[in-house]
Amino acid sequence: MTLTNVIEVLEAAYPPARAESWDAVGLVCGDPAQEVRRVLFAVDPVAAVAEEALEWDADLIVTHHPLYLRGTTTVAADTPKGRLVHTLIKRDVALYTAHTNADVANPGVSDALARAVGLTGDLVPLQPFPDDPWRGLGRVGELPEPLTLGEFAAQAAAGLPRTSGGVRVAGDLSRTVTRVAVSGGAGDSLLGTARAAGVDVFLTADLRHHPASEFVESGGPALIDAAHWATEWPWLDSAASILASSGVNVETRVSATVTDAWTRGY
Ligand SMILES: [Zn+2]
Image 1 (tube, protein in one colour):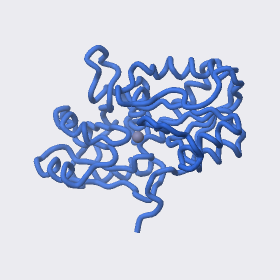
Image 2 (image 1 turned 120 degrees about the vertical axis):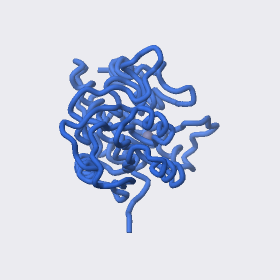
Image 3 (image 1 turned 135 degrees about the horizontal axis):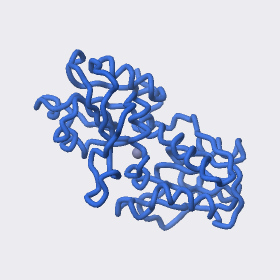
Image 4 (image 1 turned 180 degrees about the vertical axis):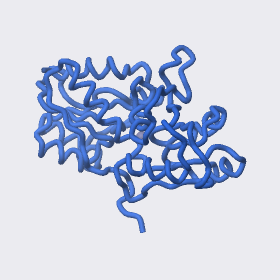
């Protein structure tokens, strides 16, 4: 299989045209004609992931986060990102990114997150595209049976990979939750949308003190804040499965390297 064959499958599932205008998705380095036998899926294009790719002899790394989100004038190896580009090119490893186009896809990042925290029924986008009710940011669904907020938080923590930041809850732990909104990654731009959706709890990452405090204080849904990496990691398996079942003959692997920014909590 060539890199072009693999990219065709990924772009059918995650059309680049659906990425936000500020985003940078697609092929970062690699020759479209090169042969691809092994594909490693990871959240972040960082040195530890490149190491893992080299050890496993991967030909392609597919990451959720872009390496360069803003323009650059150099890939010299005197910065971590430039060094990564050098490492990958020297060893013939391609790098490809599906970011906001994977967030809004169906199934996308938040579908995988919803399943990981125990939403088993139908899911709809929290913020659908005006022209497509089945695609958009976040997902809303219902738990198979009501739980207390404390029980749901524990279930969510058990369903997500462990990180030093863990899972934090804002709200009355004894309140009943049935209807749940989730959004992988930094979801505070969706706080108002989650409130308007009438959910009992909104699970996302990177919530800040003031927006979270004011949201809960005003009687909104409860909040659960998980590690950014952990909320996006479940998508890797979904993306790897799409590639593996596409008929493209490649071996896939999901990186288990924790690349959340926070190494340890005290
Ligand atoms: Zn993210």
